[in-house]
Structure formats: C-alpha cells, structure tokens
Image (tube, rainbow, N blue to C red; front, side, top):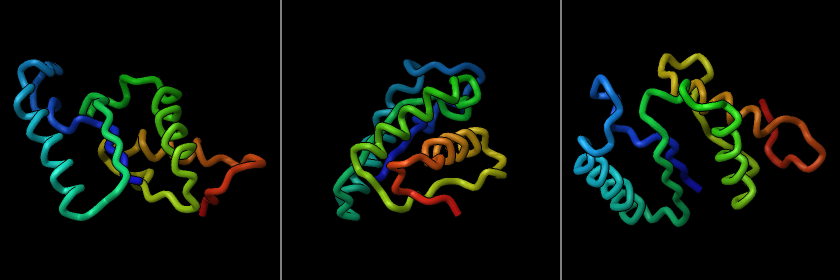
Length: 112
C-alpha cells in the first residue's frame, strides 16, 4: 500500500489556489499513476491535503486518513518520515502514523 497525503504543488504560490495550479496538479497525479504502473504497485491512495500546510489541518483528521489506510491493508510495518524532518507535512505525517500505531490490544504494527 502506498499513500500520498499531500497534493505536492500549491506551496509554490503565496496562497493555495488549486484552480491556478489545476494543470500542474493533474499532471502530478498522472505522473503518480504512471509510476505506479511502471513499478507494478498494486494499491495506491492519493489524497489532496494542502502542500506544506499540514499544520493548518487538525492532526486528528490526518490520523483518521492513516487509520483508514491501515484498516484496509493491515500492515505489520509502516515506513514514514522522520519526526525531526524540517518539512511540516513530513512531521505531521510522522505524528499521525505514530499515533495511529499506538499500543492497543489489536494493533499489528509495532513501534521501534
């Protein structure tokens, strides 16, 4: 399972304007799908959270996306970003993944 949380484009402008970047966003999504086919990756999820603005989204909402993906795939191992990454989206993703893997009775993924 491979998941893309952020749309990856709109942080290049002062304001997030998905209409201004419509063509770039479509090309970016097409490139992701082309890479999936080329690599032969079976399962892929693409979300459109605002690029470099994950700090404007409630952490709980990001956690719910991660938990949704975990429930559908039930992984033993999850690879994510380093918690000390300078990119805010990477740090928030790390926080969401760690939170979604918190010790619970039915949790398969183990933190290390």
